[in-house]
Image (cartoon, rainbow, N blue to C red; front, side, top):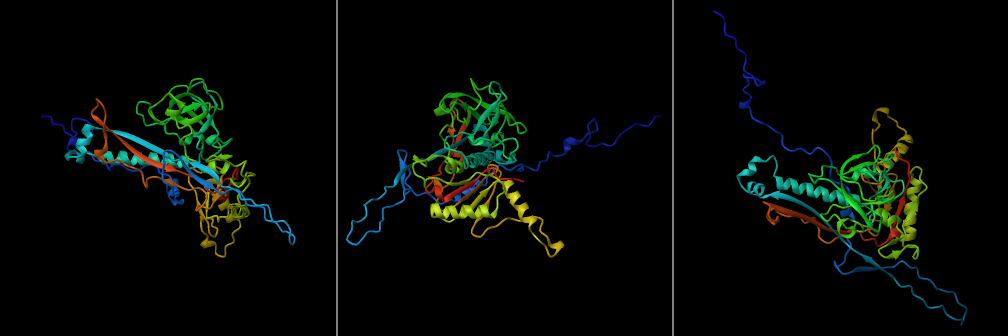
Amino acid sequence: MATATYGVQTGSAGDLSLKELGRKTTAGVKKSAQFMTEEWGWLNDLKDFEIAPSLREMTFEADVVEGTGAAFIPEGGKEARPSSPAPVTATITFLLLNKRWTISRTTQMMLGGKGARGYLENQFKFQGKKATEAIHRKLGINFYGFSTGTQAKISSGEGGTTPVLKDLYGVSGLGSTSHNRRCVDQYVVGTVASQNLDYLAATTGAAIRSISGVTAKARATNTLTISAAWTGAAADDLIVYANNVENTTLAAGTEDDLNLTGLLDGATSTSLHSISGSTYSKWNAGSDTTGGRFTGVKLHKARQVITNEGGGTADTVIWAQGVERDVLSQLQAGLRFSDAYAMEMDGSPKAKGLQFKTSRLVPDGYVFVMDSKNSVHRQMVVPQIDMPGMEDGDKIQDDSGFLYSADFLIGMPWTNRANFYYFSGLTQS
């Protein structure tokens, strides 16, 4: 009589599998990348600009004209010509930063009852966290940009769906493929159906071409893949964000002239807050665009110019990570050690009275030196992001779902541009 055959019952595939007795396990949602920006904290470090917020007009008077006319006179002679310079009116504004998301009515009900146990993480809280990240990211990008809203320019490929970008923030040569931060880095890509992607518009500066979503990007060539070619686009067209639901016009559908007056704006623009630096020489930041390596001598020069021209005291340095590394290499080369076994692998450059800051978003080759108490300010109309609760959603018409909106009112007024100094084109490591 033949012996029956059998096998060991395991969790392997096949008739002998008992894997259904096992539990499906998960370690939950893990943070797998960095999405927040240091610039959010830096904004909070700036001195608050005190003014009653107004949707009609907000101004301050800038004292940018030096008084003169004092005279030595002879005994019994004519006295000095009387004169007093007037301050100049600066006009400022704040911006509304908006982020939205949706949730189904079914999910809303489940999260409010026993169904919440079936989620790895509360979906509404997760979506709120991602909304906060999106707001922080936009603030980080705008911290350095221009109120014009220009994020880059078209270099080539303007007639198709794979345009090549150049000139981050519209600054010649910035964000190139030789830089750590490239033009395409700031855009989030995705499928158009998912909607979790950035939409961009190509403009002439005065008129819109069209709006398209970013579906892919290539850092090696600074190339974007967009959902549809920009209509009539040409080389040197400006690229601006267009993430709102209106997708036709320049004024309502894009961020043209709807960005913060960031560090590059305050450092380099001729006119800021309706005051022209060509008319009033004191309404200009100090600058050194000769490039080379950043040294203590250059830093000392910036501090002196800030004191001489703006009357302030430099207390903050914001520099590109590549510049920081190059300065570190200079300092290490000059060190001498008495004990070869006690050498530090890494160190941080320091200067008395100065706080050094850096992040991945600082434009390559730049160093910004400022008096953070009286140069650029923060204007937070509300102290924090206005985040909705689950009960604050708006019912979507004819759909079983709710729409949520997170909002933040923010401005970056400049009161003393002479208390700001910048270097560009610096050597990086």
